[in-house]
Image (cartoon, rainbow, N blue to C red):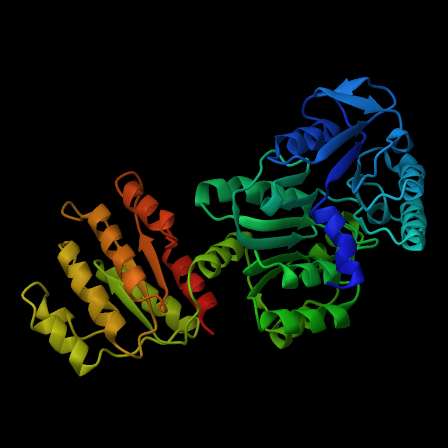
Length: 453
């Protein structure tokens, strides 16, 4: 681990944290920071700093960080912008390990905000203390139960790292992830990027053994060549997904007032992503639908089978897959013979991919079809669709798919169990066994596209 990453370790794995601007008033930033840190299942020491309070959530309050006699690994600053510089100065004198400034009112507002941010940047760099922000939500490391943010929830542990210039977006993603079952290794809101940069965070995640997939929300880049270099290097080991905000003239103007970044020409970003091997997505929903698939399933070569008990769904999926460049190999003679010689298939439908097993399909027809297609060498993964009929055996179908996943470990399986209340238990079975289910056929195709090497 290089010297810079060692310093970041004080932020991501602190043994002691001070919240400067701690507050006892519910639903405030200072209150949320303290609450989240106290909720973590860790023995780290938490210090509250507020000259106008005696205690916050049971913690004794210090007037200043200089009054804390123990070493502080991480200082989180949540005070008005006009006094942030003085507080950062005190943190540098106290030789804290790292700083997060959640306060806003810096380069994103222009004018004096830019000058103030530059002063803060100069002092931390002189002291060689890493600083995240300003104008950010903070960071979450689920590996050690660290929630150094004022987000309303803490996400489940997993292997997706989400690095975002937008903090508010992270709040909503956390909430959604709790119902969609995916989890995170880290969530990082880096705001204005005054000191610690996107490149630094990418290097951190490159070394992070708990991170399997990296998802990015970008508005602008400050050092495009360095970012390209690190993205290229990482994408050979870990898949990277990115959504770029500020593609239009209106979006560019909004970006400059949000994080003080220059959005730049969108075509340049498209070229950068392509050159770096980054998977670009258009929506936040697609970003995490694809991240979920990459988190749970193996990657594979192109060549996908589709099984459906609804012919219309097969037609739609074929369209979506072809438009995305997903190949659907023809069924070979061995596969067709196995299907046709059974007494449970409709012969007329047993020669095509997508394979329509008809609406009256019971679990035995799903079982035969799944095994037959996965045994075919040039079918490297499956999308399995279930529409709901009166005879559909949702839970049995889910159990069969789980068995197939365990038998054909190198071939990804994505499902689209369509429906609501009746399909719920089947979907829960699938997702509890790390088989991603999508309620939209195009999203299922996009998720499979992300898995192709």
